[in-house]
Length: 303
Image 1 (cartoon, rainbow, N blue to C red):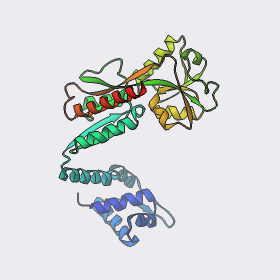
Image 2 (cartoon, helix red, strand yellow):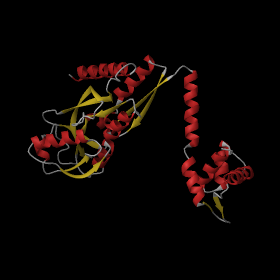
Image 3 (tube, rainbow, N blue to C red):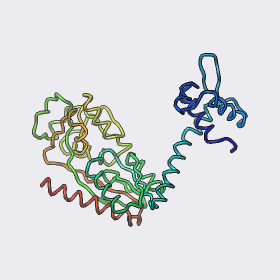
């Protein structure tokens, strides 16, 4: 590669701004040297990347392809530099974890803070992914583990699951719903309601548990909308699209937008952590210990 990072940076700015003036301002660079960098890059590649017209510029077909291949380069270089700096500070390990939005709460954040105090050498990287995507990434070795929510009904080979937290399922209702003033709700009273739900394709275990609870209550939920993300489902409830059965933790983000009403019988879900068989070793064991301690403390407070 005989073109420079600066030339790539200039091209990306022009490709995204579609203006030499705005690109130069974004890079804190005068326009003439910016233009020279682009022309130099085109000469080195042997292709015109930017179509220059009197009142507008656009990317050529070659420019569009080059942009798609290079647009993440500055971010990757920044991550590489940060990784090197962390290594120089003694942070020599990296823990790659997935999570679903349904488990995101203050207790989880506090657990990660305590974990970092215990293991300052470990860089914790988190990715918000649906359970099925997490399990695939764990199996492929792209994630070290994941907070996948409910344990799947069919357990993938080579994956182990460890329970770390329990919480109630509650009924999310839009503001003004006829049941919004209830202290608790029986599942059977929801038989005629329109449901929005987490899709079976992204979270089959959670979807199956909700279906099973409704079946026990004597009805099959009429699901009119689905989303792979629990937070999106909660937002659809807030928009008035229907009601939903979701973990209580999500209610803290939607206190002014929905009513989260307890269900009679207090059905609960058990959150599990997944990792490759035999891989639940330090530093993962320390993280699980901290998570369980937080969960136990919360359960005592609620009791």
